[in-house]
Each structure stands twice: as C-alpha cells, then as structure tokens.
Length: 126
Image 1 (spheres, rainbow, N blue to C red):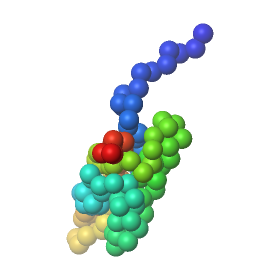
Image 2: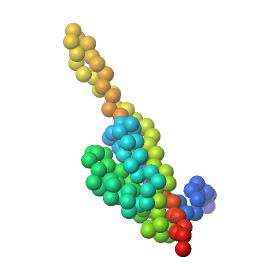
Image 3: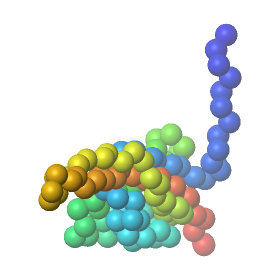
Image 4: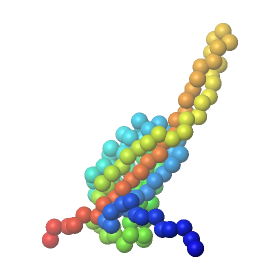
C-alpha cells in the first residue's frame, strides 16, 4: 500500500542532475552554463576543468552527477552523451545591511542560484 510511482518526465534517452543553493548569482552562473550547452560530455568536462571562473568547479560536479545518473540509473552510453540543456534559475537571496554615512544603512543582497543539466544520448552515424 505505497504511493503510486511517479511517471518519468524525461525521455528514455535523457538523464538529469540538479544542484541547488549554489552561492553565486544566476547571471554569473549562466555565463558558465553557456560554455557547455550543446557540447559532447568529454569536451564540456575539459572546458570546465580549465575554465578560470570560480563557479566552474560546481558546474563540473553537476555535470559529473548527470553523467553518473545516465550511466547507472538509465543505462545510457557515456561516449554518446551530449549536453542538451543547461539552465539556471534563481534561489533564495540573503539580505544583509551595510552601515553608511549619517546613520543610514544600505542593503546588500547575496543571491543563490540553482542549475539543471540534462544530457541526451545521440545515435552515432554508422
């Protein structure tokens, strides 16, 4: 008497990984996500490894998680995987105050974001 199994939202040749609460603004994270969109997985990993952006290591962990999900959970071929989607969303925003002149305070916002990577297995032309 359990809960009914939820239908899979992705296609049979796709795998996904989501990372939440990444401590960077969505705008900066989206710049790194643009690096890997549409690329083969090995090329995307190489680009992230040698990127000079601080957040590239977190994006690389998300990509590696999606690869592991594809291989272990969905039995997809790792060599035929392509980053079909990599999108970024807003998450919580920490609000802080900074003292300013004449007793005032200025608001400082420290945004968090989340990232979703979807991999698709492509059929290699024979």
